[in-house]
Length: 286
Image (cartoon, rainbow, N blue to C red; front, side, top):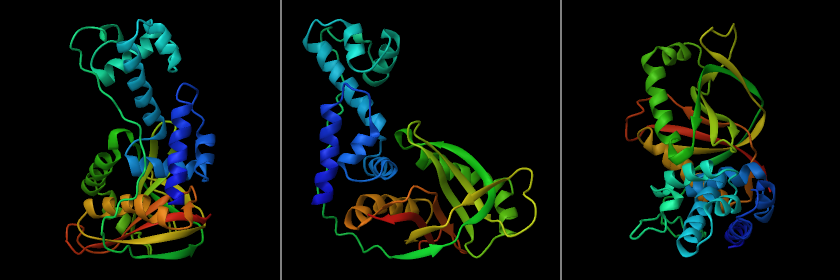
C-alpha cells in the first residue's frame, strides 16, 4: 500500500505541475526512489514514458481549454510548454487528428488521455522464481541496435532484430565463442529523455580480437535478480519482464540499479513451450 501511495503521490505532483517544465528528479523524489528506477518502472507498468504521459495530458487539457473558451491558440500553446504555434499545431494534430483552430467547430471529435492512478490488482498469477546473484564485471561482443520505446515499439523491434542476426550468421558466429551464460540479449545505455536504449545481441568476450562487424561492451559488476522464463520466445520473456516491474519490484525492497539488463538464452529450441531462459536485472536494496 505504501508503494502505491508513493506512486500516486508522484502522479499528483505531475498533475499539479503539468504547466511547468518537467522535473524528473522531483517526481522521483515523491516516489522515494531513484530517477532511473522511477522512469524505468513507470514505462514498464504504464507502457509510456513519463515525458510521453505529460505530453498527452497537456494536449488533452489544451483541447479542453480551446473547446470551452475563446482563448487564443498561441496562448494555449505557451501555457502547455510549446514555444511556437507551429510545434503546438503539429503535436496537437498528431494526437487529435485536427488543427487547434478547428476545435471550436461543430461535432469535432477530440481524444482524452485520462489521468493515471495506481491500484492493487490481485491477479492470481503463478509465483515468480528468482534468485539473487553477485557477479563480477565482464565484457561482451556482438551487434547492437538503437531501439525506441515509444508506443511499445521495442516489443516489435527487438524480435525483428533477432530474426536479422539469426539470418545473417551473427548468432552462429557468437555461438562459436559463447561463454557459460550462453547467448545474451542486453538492454543498455538507456536514454529516458529520448525514449531510447541500445539492444545488443552478444556473447561473453573470452579472448581474441573483436570482429570488425561487432562491438565490445562492458557489463559492470552488479547484484542481480535472476528470473526464470518458461515458454516460447518472445512472448514468454516479454511477459516475465512486465511482471518484474508491475509485481516484483513493488512487492520487494529493491529498486533498479541503473545498469544493463540481460536476457540469458540457454540451449534449446526457443519455440518450445517448455523453453527456459533467464532475465537478469541489476538491483539495489532500498
